[in-house]
Image (cartoon, rainbow, N blue to C red; front, top):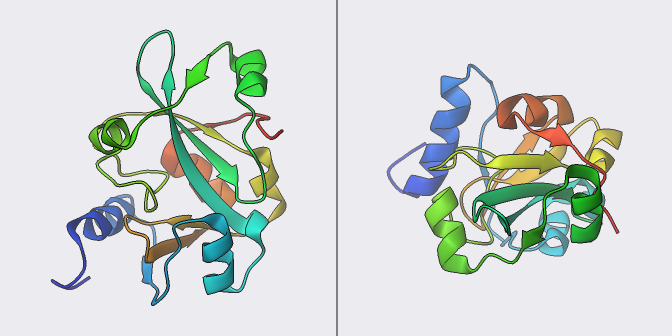
Length: 160
């Protein structure tokens, strides 16, 4: 990565390199802020986008990351039934404070704080998925197995 690459994107690439992966952040000329934009820019299915959504645990106030298939709406009620955790909205300031990234470019890992993370099992139907990598113009192509390994997450039925 060169000096023109944002610190956020460099942090994601450093995280990947430090863990011995051969995964490389890719920079795009069009934005990937939403799953629809990302799928269009990458020429893949919306379901192959691994969107990172940060919520606040209502009981503890801690951040919880949900990595969902881009085609799915997340059901907070289903997550509560599956895990016992009641999740609420997190504002942009909370998200940046907990992850170190701005909304629209949050990767599933390389956060400034440890986040409890849940993965959408629908991502497992693909050999690889695409996730944000620190900015709305940066992505990483990753297998569901590597996503699980690098996040330390659990698979939780969370789609509406």
